[in-house]
Image (cartoon, rainbow, N blue to C red; front, top):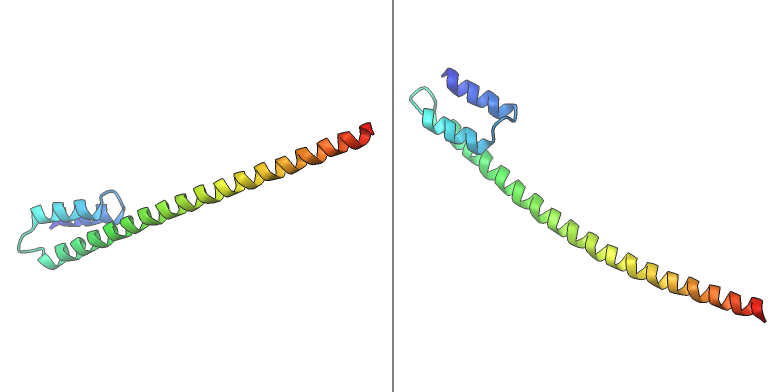
Length: 97
C-alpha cells in the first residue's frame, strides 16, 4: 500500500505523468488497490493526451495566423516605404525647380 501512495504523491506533485502512474500502479495492482483507481488514472491519461493534442492544434493555428499576419504587415511596410520614397523623390524635384 505504501508504494501505491508514493506513486500517487509523485503524480500529484507532477514528478510523473498520469501514464507513468498508471503503468506503475498496474504493476503493483493487488487486492488492496481497487482496479477502479487504475481506471480513473487511465481516464486522466486519456484526458491529458486529448488536451495535449488540442494544444498542439491551437499552437499550429496560432503559428499559421502569425505567419499570415507577418506577411501582410511586411507587404504593407513595403508599400509604405515605396510611397515614402516617391514623396522624397517628388520633394527633391520640387526643391531643384
